[in-house]
Image 1 (tube, helix red, strand yellow):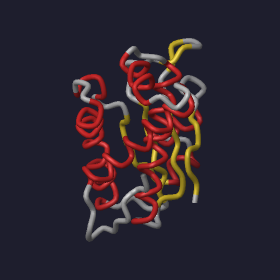
Image 2 (cartoon, helix red, strand yellow; image 1 turned 60 degrees about the vertical axis):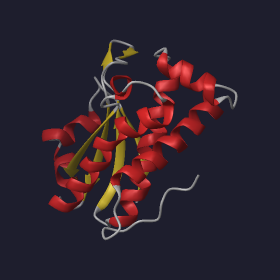
Image 3 (cartoon, helix red, strand yellow; image 1 turned 180 degrees about the vertical axis):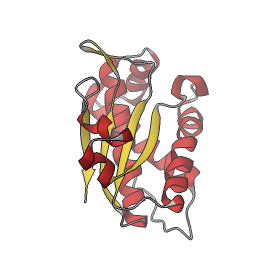
Length: 170
């Protein structure tokens, strides 16, 4: 399923969230469950770390691709998972750090709306309770200057405690 073509004028955060979740579930099935969507859902529901990583990675990538088409201030996107020692904390949401050249209220609002719709879209598509997916992707918008100076949320991208994975770059 292709992501919906959208602009600021036709922005539908729920439809973007649904399309992103559908693509992510297909990706999890392909990568972690030998193409079986039911098996992938069972692994996600069971808290399988690999399946959850694939889910958050591809959901983030799908969301970013749509947002990047609508706003040219987006420079890069990084996925950050909190860790305890060597292990990822599965109950903590993945953080999608959107690095922009200039922070605008419109872009931050659009990104927040899509992130807010993800748990409902996940629940609607999978039939799982919303709490299974609640906040599995926390979206934060930071200016490129914060990242380059290593301050505020921008410092998180270079953290040794929660390594980031670049999922998109302009």
